[in-house]
Image 1 (cartoon, rainbow, N blue to C red):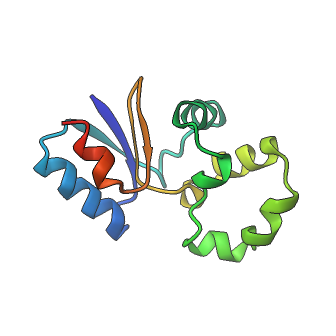
Image 2: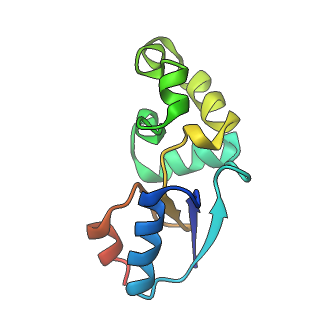
Length: 116
């Protein structure tokens, strides 16, 4: 069973849900806005994904622009970035599909295909 971190007003998340349903992938939805991942959970997701922490920022979101993160992230430490991600689910890139072994950040149909 997977967990899908998403936001119900995000069109990319809705497309990911439809795609996963078509593949008959079983998952539990968790609203990233009301149940944001904790700092420890984010650290685990980053480690398991083998992605740079910057890949976990929602670069197309209003909060990203409002906080001028395109510039401000350059001067932040890893821990500061982690604290920021844990502070607001709307800053976190979505959807994130994960279980104990796999973390997929963003709607990645080619990676979803390999799960089925």
